[in-house]
Structures are given as structure tokens and as C-alpha cells.
Amino acid sequence: MSVRIWDGPSATLDDPQPPRMTRRSFLRGTTAAAGGLAALVAALNPLREFTQQDEFTLDQFLQKHYKEMTPEDMEKALARIRAEVEKRYGVRPHLRDVKPRAGVEFVYALNLSRCIGCRKCVYACVAENNQSRSPQIQYIRVIEMPRGTLDTEKGNHHYTHPKVPDINHFYMPVQCHQCANPPCVKVCPVEATWQEPDGITVIDYDWCIGCRYCEAACPYWARRFNFAQPDLAGDAINPDMSYLSNRPRPKGVMEKCHFCLHRTREGRLPACLEACPTGARKFGNVLDPNSEVAQILKTKRVFVLKEEVGTLPRFFYYFDERYPNSLDPEAVKIGQAIGCFPGSPAPEALA
Amino acid sequence: MLDEPGGIPESPFQRGAAAAWLIGPAFLILAAWLMLGSQRGDLPLAPAVLVASDQITPGARRDPMGEPPSVMSGGFKHACNECHRVFDSPTAQHRPMVQHTHITLKHGMNDNCFNCHNRENREKLVLYTGDLISFDQVPRLCSQCHGTVYRDWQRGTHGKTMGSWDAASGLQIRLECNDCHDPHAPAYPPIAPLPAPQTLRMGLQFPYGAHEHEHHVPLQEGAGRNRKPAAHPEKHE
Image (cartoon, rainbow over all chains, first blue to last red; front, side, top):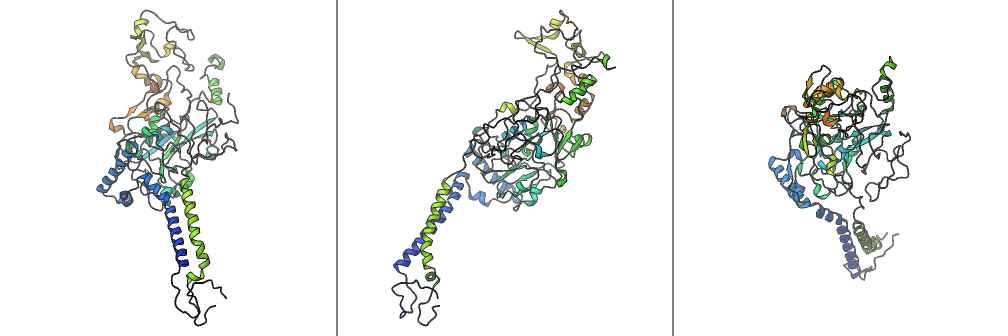
């Protein structure tokens, strides 16, 4: 037996008419409708802030995927981005869409015997690629590793020695490995990231929905998410930009190392390499047998990080055959024994 | 059930009438919560860590002596032989320096000036064979001892390359030995590292050096600052 609550004046057994609108039901309905509308507006409030902050325009909304854009579409998109950058940062950017070169496949090689862990590459990259200073986004992680292991779990990112290198550690910078079999590309639900013919995996920042699947998929932790509106430190913005690389990113999209494609596709070297004081970083076209990287792959002892996960990185680590390093106590002992270091016994004594 | 004939036909609106009274206020509370929630704004972000651009300037770390070699003295440029034609130098290895006091000689066994410099003509370097070479042919001199490194340098697998990765472009600059290494003290000196990262997802948050009670909250202000230098299990000094 259900309870009857209906108590309108017309609710009599004698009157089979459907109930008409009463004052009570009118008030009730109006309150609900107004409350609902207010809730809807309140729920959309962040969207309003979003459009105010990010200059979200209809053009951007209707923009096609990078691969579907005609040259005219691209010109339109570049013009829009130029205007946005100029408005926000007061800098007229040299923005273009740099296409890959034919017959070029980029490869990076890093000499672990030479890296001293000074982090100059990290900050050169931040400055070159307009990365957010706050919250901090850095593409390169320099891991300080205890000697005798390659287990990155034992590494430390937060080392603060007054001087590097520390004699008990070696330093392993990790950035995007531009894998030939990239897991990050496979998991992207909207194809906002893909591998270019020259081996660089790129992101269309206007197509990315910020789901962060790629960040989870990457075994090298190479992808970064813009949790907040990037703070680009005002006038420090680098106006040399391209669509797929270092143009300013909005909040809520992924980004990562792209081998400075706006530089490298024009023949220049990546910013991290140019900043490296020891020449530990090497970059070039692996399809050219005389290039430095091809020579390294041919003549040096080379390995890739996490080979077992099958990602086929284009980023290689290698070692030198070194003669005694004056910072290495074991090597100093050997060096002194064979007479290579000050404090050695006289050559006659050795004989 | 109210199915008797003549009963008031029931509408869903009627049946949920009590609940309907709650819908309006519930919506209003939701609206207030959403408004206030979105007014909280973003997290208080940590201040940006800025690094002076001269710390990341590309290029050689040294400014090696050019060809012909010269020294600045009293605001004037002097060729080496201007003095050394008159003053010879003793060949003793560890004599106190009167001139060239900025030179620290830390080159292992190679601690004699005239292993590399020519005694007769100070504007030339000398090979083991006795052949004189100019100051812009330094790699030939170094290769006499550092053969494996010289081989690597010729291949491009040692040393720093600048300008372009494409040797055919003609823009490539290969740095030579003394663009990076001081020939008198060639070991690369330890330098101060740039600030540690305060980013998200940087490995285990309690690495071997850090302390477990230090929470890693990189988005928030104050996090990571006053971080103590990592205490290392092995002391090296």
C-alpha cells in the first residue's frame, strides 16, 4: 500500500481530472529548476576560467589533426599560435613547421665515462624548449648512480654535492629515447603522438587530451604533464619555435624531449649537446656511416637502457677505454703502481 | 495500490513529491560547493628556479693560446721570444716560477716544460722527433702519448662537436684538445652542479641519500627547499 502524499485542492475522489498546476507544485518546480541551473553554471565555472586563461578559440577547437592539415590549415594554425604567443609573452616568435629530412635518422649517444653530472644539459633544455619553470618541468633527468650497478632504482636525482663528479658515483642522464618501437605511441587513444620518418616521436599539443596514458606507458619516464599553466619566466622565452617542438604548451597536455627538432632538422645540434662541457653527448644521422654516432655504434661498447622491454631506443650509452682517472682511488693506486701519477715510485724502483 | 476506479491517477511527480522538495536545495548546495570549490584556485606553486644563461652557454671552456702565441703584459701583447731570446729558462722540473705564475703543472709524468715547448724558439712546440710544430697543431703533440684518445677524436667519438651534426654542411666545428683541456693540468676539474630538480616523478622519492620523512610535493611552495645535502654512506674525503 503506497502512501498518498498528493494533497492538492483538486485531489478528491470525485474529480478524476489530472492535477493542475498548483502554487505549491509551481514553487517546488521553480526551485528545483533554478537550483539545477545554478549547479550547471557553477559546474561550468572552471571551463569559463579555462577559456579566459588559455585564449581557447573556435579556430583551435576546429583545428584538424596535424597529419590531416593542408598547408593552408597549417599556415592558419601557425598564425593563430604566433598571435597567442605575442599576446601572452610580448615576443614575436619565429614559428614554423619543420619537416623531417629524407635519408636522415637521428640517433643520440651519451658517453658515461665523460658525463660529470653538472646538469647544464638540463637547464639548457629548459631554456631552449620553453619548459615551465614553475611547476618545474625538465625533460632530462640526471641520475647519480653508485659505481658498480646499472640499476636505476639505486640512483638519486637530488644530489647536491658542492662539486661534481663525486668519486663514488657515475652519472647517467635519461631523456626521451625516441624508441623505434614506442609504447607511448601505442597507448595514445587519440593519436596525438606518433613517430616521424626521422625517428623522432612528436606530440601535437593541440590534439592531446591529457589522459597521461603515454606517461604511464613510457619505461624511461620521459614524458611530462603540464599540471598547471606553465610559467615561462617572462622574457626568458625562446622565440625560435616550431609547431611540433617547443612552442608554449597549454595546461593539461603532455610534452617530452623531441631531440630539439626545430634545430636538428635544420642541421644544428640539440641544445643539451651544445651546453655539455665535456663532450659526453653525441648526436647525428645514423644512416651516414661517417657520422659520429655511426662511428660510436661501430667502435665503442654501447648499450641501451632497459633493453629487455623491447622498445629499441635511438638513445645509446657508451663507455671509453679510460686510462686511470685521477678521481678514482682504485685507478690512482694502479696509476701510481705503473708510474702514471705523481707520487709514483721512481722508474728504477719498479724495475 | 490505488487502482480502484475513480482514484486519482498517479504521476511520477506525485509519487516522488517528498523527494522533489529536496531536489531544489540539493542543487543549490551543489552549486555553492562547485562555486566555492573552483574559487580555491591553483595550488601554491614553488618559486621558479632560474639559472643564469652564462652557466649554460655553449662553447669551449678554455680560451687557448692562438697562433702565433702571445701573452698580455702591461696591457701590451708580447710574443714569447721577445723575452725568451734574452732570458733562457732553467730546465729543472720543479723550480719556482717567477713569470707565468698562473700555470699549474699537473700533467702526471709529463712535468718538464721542454717536453712540449721548444727551448730555442718559444713560439713553437716540439715533437719527440725534434720537429717543430706551430701552436695550432696541438693534437699532433698530444697524440704522441694519448694515442687511443687521438684515434677516438679523429673518429669523432671523443671531444666536442659544435655547429652542425652534418659534416657535409661545412658548419661543423670540431674542438681540439686544448679547447677543453688545459695542457698544463689536463684533468677536467670538478665543477659545481646546477640546482637539483624539483619536478614530479623523479624516481624513488627516498633515494639512498635522502631521508624518508622528507615528503616530495613538487607542486607546492616551500617543498624541496632547505633540503639537506644528501648524506652519503661512503665518505670520500
